[in-house]
Amino acid sequence: MESLLRFDLQLFHLINQVWISSWADGLFSFIRNQYIWGPLYVFLISFLIFNYGKRGLFFCLLIILTVISSDLISSELIKKNVQRIRPCNQVTLEGQRRLIVHCGSGYSFTSTHATNHFSVAMFLVLGGATFLGRFRYLFLIWAASIAYAQVYVGVHFPFDVVAGSILGMMIGWSYYQVFHRFNFLR
Image (cartoon, rainbow, N blue to C red):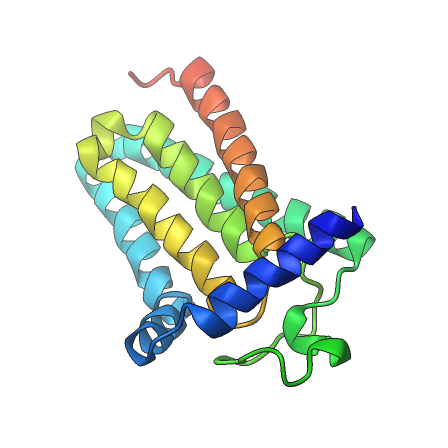
């Protein structure tokens, strides 16, 4: 376990301090902001309801339940029990990290940003073929970008976002199973 945590710290150092550029500072600060991705999801929900009626509404309700579940599992269940300190709050990393955005006071493991975005992305990839076609795969790239940004800006360790991404994909897959089994509006 010690060597795993050491590797996590080394990878954090590479992403947060070595693989950096001024344009990436702006980009990753920008895309992880809720005022950027929030409207994207509002547009998605509006698009689905407007274009697909009851089927779109049912699909959107499952997206919302997916986000609520992923958020609660990550932030309330896992974070509060694991209690891993964020890299931006670790005194031992003072001077060994770059903090580009505000550092939250909550815990780090798992990354709730990664969990939430990957849960939606997985649900859309598996269940969104009818609604979104090939465009649905872009949500995986979007989720991965946000997860990477969490490490880049200094608020999460790499394993926090990897674990959050895996958890999110499992939750998205679970809600897809509900959609697939109970999609009586085909």
